[in-house]
Image 1 (cartoon, one colour):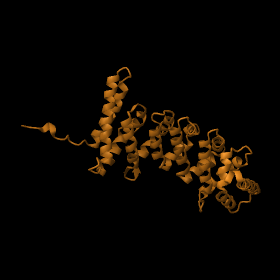
Image 2: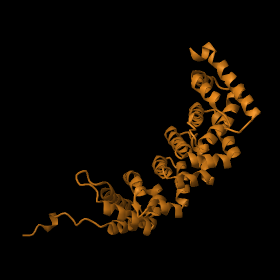
Image 3: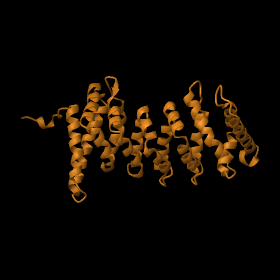
Image 4: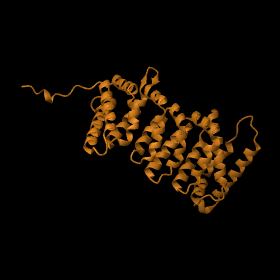
Length: 325
């Protein structure tokens, strides 16, 4: 008697996994909320296929993933436009499928075929996918998922540069103040990565968009939300404290940061909480400002005068007992 039905099914190839995922995602378009059972069944099929994808990319806990299969799956995803489907269908996926997608996303982006990160190159050629992920912060159901995916993209300078220079970047100044604390915090983490991961990219952006950026950033620094103010001040301090070494880009970031920092510190209506932060960090800030200059060959008396005013204000705050006690 044959018991072949107990035998494990033949492992799927990358091509078969790609086709199954693509078909199940496309099938979601044919379902409507009226067809509740049909939609549920379609989503179950997606969940099953995503679990197969995760197993192929990550292994199953006992067997390590096959390197060649992982690379081939990334190639197939790009060739069949599955990468775009994964992003665009994110809002209607179930919780388990979204979790699997986030877990697999970073693995896909890291795949190198020849000398190229094939999935990163695909996103470069379909750059609207980044805009879509940014806008998804407005959907609290998937905001944390898209935030994770965006931060993986930001690890690559070319993708970070696009987001910084895109119209969607300004949305972060709204997202970091969303009423949902988890979403706002996640958005600030992504915002921070955009402004700290790649010094050369950030420097070029700040030089080209100095006025627009710091006008918006000043709004964060004067926000009625204390968490926003504190996070913004801390991030600005990181810009200032970034060691310039011999890199002009880092020096430019420091100088640009100083120009917003000076306005903020000189503001006579600073909230007490911010005065406390400045007072308690006065040693580090004063040392930094003392050593901050425009560079060799530069002679800017106004810059030095402004710096002296700011240093005196920080020193004044540091001497107030009610701030440092």
